[in-house]
Length: 198
Ligand code: IMP
Image (cartoon, rainbow, N blue to C red; front, side, top):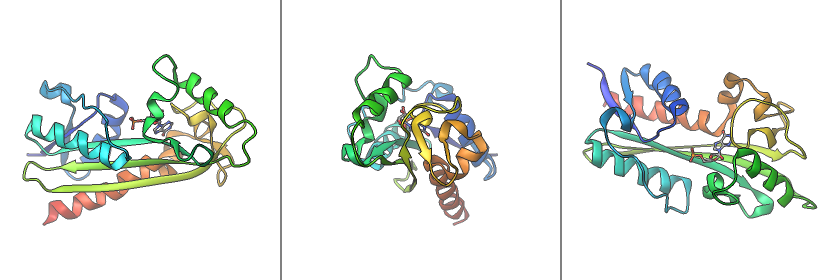
């Protein structure tokens, strides 16, 4: 029987992505809803890695199953690494994705550096207390205006020089190959495969 892991997210896109990747290792990935548990955890960490670990620990405790969580965001050099762990809340509750990236473009007016990177941390916690972690990063710049229709969040303003496109102008496959989350997931599935063989 496939080993069951719970992914600490209500995001159907993340569940689908994780199912596809971990399915290859013979792992069944379920969401908190499938188990009738609450995955809401206050993200009080100061790093992506801390927040991912907080979420994975809480969900592992509630589900009594191995739990995986991720945390990610956009770090802009001219904003001293911000919005960082506050990416989803940048500008306050009233803003949507477009409101947040327009605020970012306004905040960078007149700045000499537009360097930025996306970062993603993944944490996995087993009921025996063992933990696995992985991180991924994608470097780029903040465009001068939004471009592209794909993706979500800050994708229309995150420009990748090697591709000469924003994340929102890439296909899902192209984005996954170079994205912070794609890299973290690849590292994580390699570490998990090694752990499960032991
Ligand atoms: P979370 O890791 O799902 O909590 O995401 C945090 C926030 O970072 C999201 O709400 C987005 O604003 C931003 N973010 C993380 N990854 C991406 C991405 O791949 N593209 C665009 N925005 C992202």
